[in-house]
Image: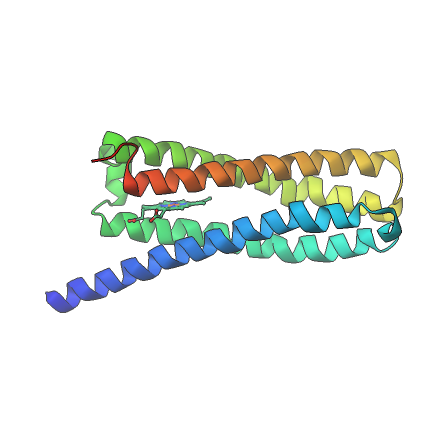
Length: 177
Ligand code: HEM
């Protein structure tokens, strides 16, 4: 029994660590793109190199991002299992009760929004914007698509910050005591 409990606890600790590692990689990567790479590629002297570089970086980071999102879900489910929740609790309502349940419901709703808008950004708008940019580096059509893709990227970044705060509130509560 003790061995079983220890193995479960080790799995739980590994899941918490991987959940936070995914946050560091995903949020850190998005901040790097928004604060460092995008402004650098907007400089006039990078005009010719920027579209190809951006294409390479964005397609590589896309898979890093989706791996992190998958890791959030898998490790999140493991942590909920350790806390005594199973799939049935999502349907009978037990999972959504109390401060923990309400915070989790809000957090998972925002995660669903992140998954939806990331799919639009990563598989539709982003590739179209980069393709247009590569065809015509200074044309208005490419610039418009890039602006739209940038906005979705910024909203995702904002939601990521809100979801990470909700994660902390989930564990530590909204009020002291
Ligand atoms: C964008 C995705 C996500 C982000 C940024 C995120 C972030 C976080 C953060 C920062 C914590 C706080 C850890 C602490 O204060 O100790 C946390 C905890 C937690 N998250 Fe997430 N999370 C995400 C997705 C998910 C998903 C999809 C689930 C469930 C399927 C989930 C379930 C949990 C649970 C159960 C905890 C509590 C861990 C514990 O037992 O201490 N998270 N999350």
